[in-house]
Image (cartoon, rainbow, N blue to C red; front, side, top):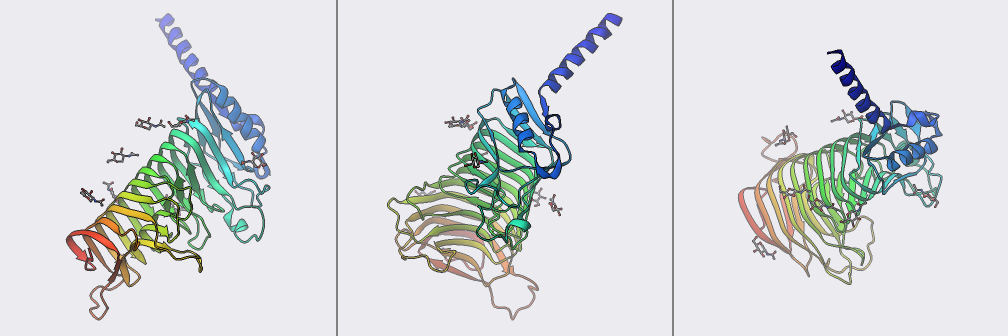
Length: 392
Ligand SMILES: *[C@@H]1O[C@H](CO)[C@@H](O)[C@H](O)[C@H]1NC(C)=O
Ligand SMILES: *[C@@H]1O[C@H](CO)[C@@H](O)[C@H](O)[C@H]1NC(C)=O
Ligand SMILES: *[C@@H]1O[C@H](CO)[C@@H](O)[C@H](O)[C@H]1NC(C)=O
Ligand SMILES: *[C@@H]1O[C@H](CO)[C@@H](O)[C@H](O)[C@H]1NC(C)=O
Ligand SMILES: *[C@@H]1O[C@H](CO)[C@@H](O)[C@H](O)[C@H]1NC(C)=O
Ligand SMILES: *[C@@H]1O[C@H](CO)[C@@H](O)[C@H](O)[C@H]1NC(C)=O
Ligand SMILES: *[C@@H]1O[C@H](CO)[C@@H](O)[C@H](O)[C@H]1NC(C)=O
């Protein structure tokens, strides 16, 4: 009997030791951890040790405040690394280098996990007002990352976008809380380019720009249970402005809520002369609630965020196979549905089914003018309820 107990204790302690051997706690790398002095060196050392260990390894960031300058957590790694953030990371209000555009960079990794419930504090309020300094920092950047999970992290007041992805594949984002004031400049929630196989699930986004922006070369994205507001909505684009862009396709947005946003479901392309045609196709929006949204449904192929966009030619982006199904709620503007498509490449196969949008406020008020739609160069079909009246 005693022998068995000793054996079991031995096994448990071996397992424990293995587990701990693969935990790299940044506290063991002598950070200052006062939120004011730079802890980049301690984090890089912890990352380096985790990366070159074997099996599964985690970089653990316990509770506390850590100021980090722009930093790269780079692979390839021998271990499969988890970045477990329990504490708060604080960005430098003054970006020290003109060549750094992203604060926390993860690159060249497979099977990365980022979790822990901690907070990324971008220090936006101190940075937004700075004139002519170094670039405002994107808080969290993923580049060349595959098969990874970003889960249970909070991001507040990023200086630029909160999260960005470039050339990533098979990434899941879930249980994130992203917050910045509605008036904050360029603070996209999650933006991505040249990425595919992206899942965004149970994410709460309140920010000053797009909640989600799917840019050039984005494919196979599922977005569900996302709350957006304030913000500029969930956007395909903007794109169709530069000659090095790629198609956007297979986007599925389901069971999302928009509250007090400028736009809801938006596709935006520039009216720009491109040397090659582009497509945005196979986009499905389903079970969407709008609460006091200015432009709930909006295809804008004359996108021009600044006053003067130069030469006016019809957009060369071909939009096709876009389905809007079960979209209901309230609209703050007069035009609930806008399909402003390209004269040279009219929108094809646009389908609207069960659209039920009414004016914000008291809907028993009969003197209010009904909501309108705006349609140009659009072809498609409609089924079921259509409020406002359909134009396809
Ligand atoms: C910041 O810029 C410096 C100088 O160009 C560069 O060496 C460093 O890798 C950059 N860091 C990040 C996080 O991009
Ligand atoms: C990610 O996947 C792409 C496409 O399969 C591949 O070229 C790249 O090497 C992978 N990157 C990593 C870090 O595994
Ligand atoms: C992404 O996942 C799919 C399906 O599981 C898989 O076939 C593909 O190889 C993965 N992509 C990368 C780059 O690992
Ligand atoms: C997200 O964070 C904000 C600000 O920290 C907080 O007020 C809000 O309750 C959080 N929302 C969720 C869904 O966790
Ligand atoms: C998105 O959902 C569709 C159908 O539900 C599925 O075929 C596809 O693989 C999913 N994509 C991702 C990235 O999970
Ligand atoms: C859809 O969203 C609502 C609230 O936003 C949530 O209560 C419900 O569980 C979601 N449905 C599914 C199937 O995820
Ligand atoms: C429109 O959809 C139908 C059926 O899904 C398909 O056969 C057709 O090719 C589509 N047309 C265009 C222009 O995409």
